[in-house]
Amino acid sequence: MPKIHHAAAAFILLVASAQSAELTPWLELQAKAELGWVQHSEQHKNLGPWWQQGTGQLAISDDRLTTGPILAALQINSDSPWSARLHLSHQQALDAASGVTEAWLQYQPLPLDGYRLKVRAGWFYPALSLENTDLVWSSPYSSSFSAINSWFAEELRAKTLELNVSRPGRAFNSNHSWQAVLGAFRNNDPLGSLIAWRGFAVHNLQTRIGGRVDFAHYPSLRRFPLELQPDWVEPFVELDGHTGWYSGLHYLYRQDTELRFYHYDNRADPTVLAQGQYAWLNKFDQLAFQQQLSERWRLVSQYLDGRTEMGYDTVLIDYRAAFVLLNYQHDLWQATLRYDHWQQWDRDATAGDDNSGRGHNWTFAWQFPLSEHWVFLSEFSRMNSHQASRGQWAGWPLQRNFYQSQFSLIWRFD
Image (cartoon, rainbow, N blue to C red; front, top):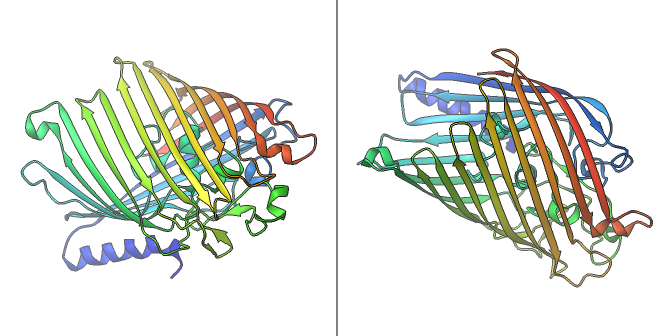
């Protein structure tokens, strides 16, 4: 059975099981769609985005009317501890296809002595982000995601079994709540390809399960020792038969302060070449932080530190990224300012393939609700990027500035 059909099969199985047990399943539907006009400065033109095999790090390189992403979430609940969730997306970019971005079954029994247990199985993001908390892993603060979560949206998901044990403070008459998370996964072996060849990017594109992401066909990919590396990645495949793992710890103080720490290790064998792709050994640590500063002001931040490796030390990169986001909620509107910074260090000795890079990005977003279902959004981004790999083409500047303005109408149904 194709992997993109697993979610549908799981939904059918859950409904059939509920009916056979004379339970009452019910369906919840939510949707979100964006229609907007995107405009760029002259400095960004003629430097196409990575998914069109360019080296640009914003998703669109020309002035155009855009539709999407179009997002939908389906949830099946029942009078039992079992539920199921399916997330769907359609967008003009990447492979311009509709598909499943997440799908999982969940088991959550009644609390035991105040403690809560939750088990998830399927395809999904670990709960790393405090930025992407809106419908179908989108952001409530802006159209684009931070550089960290833009990369997660491209390459980070897997076929996962996750166990979550929590100690909610209210059950113990305490202001402190804790969660411990442990996950085992497969089908995320190419994780790190895009950081190596393109560097970090800023956008709102989520790769569908079974999807593919293209990037520039660098001259170094045409010669030894990289001639077998394709100029694309299918992130959600299993290549070496190894099971990866992650662990996380969440802490919440009242409803004001939240911390999430995760360690992620895909345990891939970087010497394996299968299905036209290399496996990439990728390990990282990350810390997400959120603070409600006052009734109107909120601070959100995230820090990422990791390493990715392919081949016999053919490609070896350390990477680091962070962002700080400040959100203001007015009675009638909200505004968000986000600053991103990232860097990659090339640690291998492969000649003619320098994967070092660094950059930063400022994003300002303003949202004004027009009605119950419609919101107007304006967003402005300024990115400064230095990618050594651009030097593989004669006359291409390593340093580039990108500017983007966006005006959108967002429709949502809850």
